[in-house]
Amino acid sequence: MKNETFYSNAKLLITGEYVVLDGSWALATPLRVGQKMEVFEHAPTLLWKNFDRNGKLWFEAEFELSPDFKELFSSEKKISETLRLILKQTRKLNPAFLQNQGAEVHNHLSFEKEWGLGSSSTLINNLAQWAKIDPFDLQQNTFGGSGYDIACAAYDVPILFLKKNDKVEIIPIKINWPFKDELFFVYLNQKQNSRESISYYKQLPQADEKTLRQFSDLSTKFVLCATLDDFEKLIQKHEALMSKLLNLPPVKEKLFPDYPGSIKSLGAWGGDFVLVTRKDVQQYFPQKGFSIVFSFKDLVK
Image 1 (cartoon, helix red, strand yellow):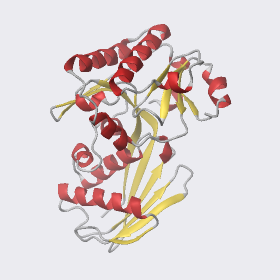
Image 2: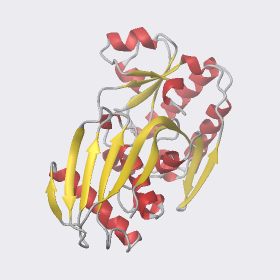
Image 3: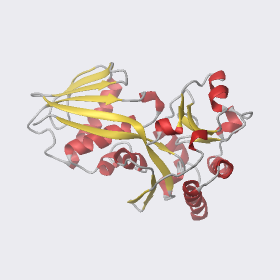
Image 4: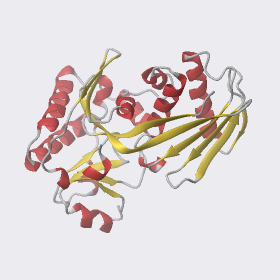
């Protein structure tokens, strides 16, 4: 086995959170950060190491190459169990995967794993590349979800994404917003559990076709938007419609009612990053204790 390197982009879901699971078009974008996987020869086991964006080792484990990838050692049991599930599903999709040759795997994140930018999806996509299997199949067999994050892992431009009747449609697009320098991403100081959020959504009355069309229409309008004022109106419409569907207050109403610009949740409501308009962001949010702020141009590919 030769040494190999794989890379996948992190992601942000700009529109269509939750409803992308039910067949709404969603706007998503790959990011300038991601995860690199390096694979080295190693016998006769699988040695696994995860490094953070500062190069610090934060997880390691060793597994037999047996059918259930029996754990020989791990620094954290819960992570090891999840990894074993992923490895077993990988071999299910490719029975020849790691059958006769061990490996040492180094995973390098270029973002904090707590940020919710895709530490799982980038891992799934890298592993699928290595094992030569379909990353969408591997995701469905492990974490589930719509798959927009897997699409972003492999694309280097923003996309419109649709999953309907188990078929995925991806349209690469170019975002020509002239107001990009007025857009920022703010981290809310807590990671939201995507699976818990999906579970909550699935317990609600399902979005009807009219609602899905409304969200799809908003996604298209976001792409074609020409002014910041129109963009903020779209944010307000999207947040109001999603708030009604989820029976949850919008993030601006809940946390930042006095902010002069618009604020939009991205992905699971209640954590991770929000999209914020207007340059007041650089004074307002750090004063409120939210110091992790990225400009649109610094984060989005």
